[in-house]
Image (cartoon, rainbow, N blue to C red):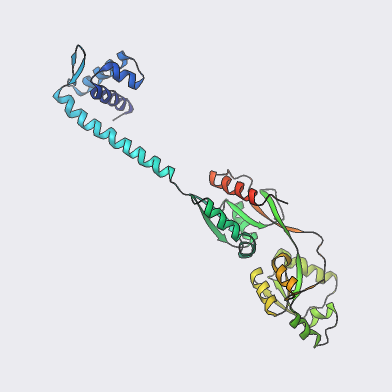
Length: 302
């Protein structure tokens, strides 16, 4: 069946329904001659008479009644199918994938994500738990929609929108520092030599920065404990396992209560930031636009 025959059957169905060529023409927004020509063509194609012409309209022949039963059923099935598809589209769940580290999710974004899910149940979020560096890689390869990350070193291919500043600092528990002093550690320099310095893993940008600082300032480092993520680094610091180099904003309560003591060993030259990031060559989907708009409403930026 070609498109032309479908149009002929549509005209036939309207004429059969109203038993009137004029009414069928008005319903189809075509002229009466066009309707008559369509019926004549269909009758010619099928080799049967479909209508009996009367002074006030038309009447289906026996053959026409048989055809109309099938045509009417077919068009009704098509309309139901289109309606079902429209309903699926109306209720369709949109999805966005977001790369985020455990630390940022736990200390920063969890309340926001909970609120977004509550207010936008039609959007399903897929969280990919990984480092900011891994998120940058996946965004470049268009394997993620959005990232919540630390500031990227290069931003040429990214749209980065910072929302929170932070700084790194050295901390230790009072009990741990007391233990170091009992081992004749009297100065800040001694803490590094006699204590356990807890840092993020090798090749992490922050680790590279602090290693360079130690080298440039001739610090003697004793034992070093490498930790895979900031969550563990903070936990180990609070447990008193050593001197941790952690994000200050994540331990404000512990610093204020005295559970941790800040060691002014070095001063970072500038604030760092967390931000929302996506590939600048990505075409934003409606779900992404909704998420970004909601994000900027909650976090106006810095």
